[in-house]
Amino acid sequence: MPTPMRNKLYKLQFEKAQDCYVLLYPEGMVKLNPSAAEILLQVDGNNTVDGIISALKAKFPDAPDSISEDIHRFLDEAENKEWIHYEQ
View 1 (cartoon, rainbow, N blue to C red):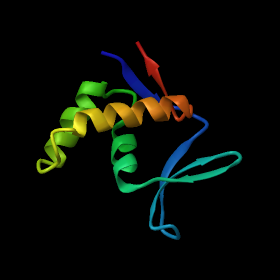
View 2 (view 1 turned 90 degrees about the vertical axis):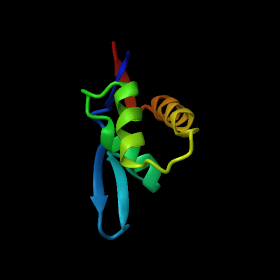
View 3 (view 1 turned 60 degrees about the horizontal axis):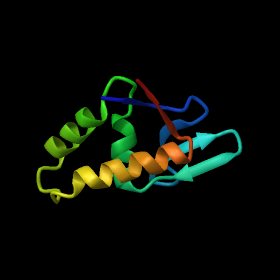
View 4 (view 1 turned 60 degrees about the vertical axis):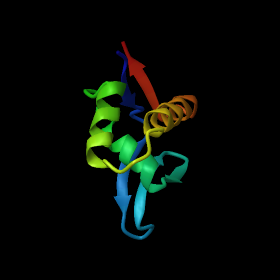
């Protein structure tokens, strides 16, 4: 299973002023919604996609069954935006 890794050009951090997680990069900042932040916090270069899904299902047991699809969709979007890439 592929393992997503964050792009080193983007730094994930909590911004008190924004009261949310953000991705900082040389040209600016992306404010993340809570769901996006929870997913990206799991992207550490060690967790596979299946591992991320399992961790988030355990953390949010009341989440709908579609959580797996939502996580896949977000990771696809994050890859398209070059926030992450995959190690095989």
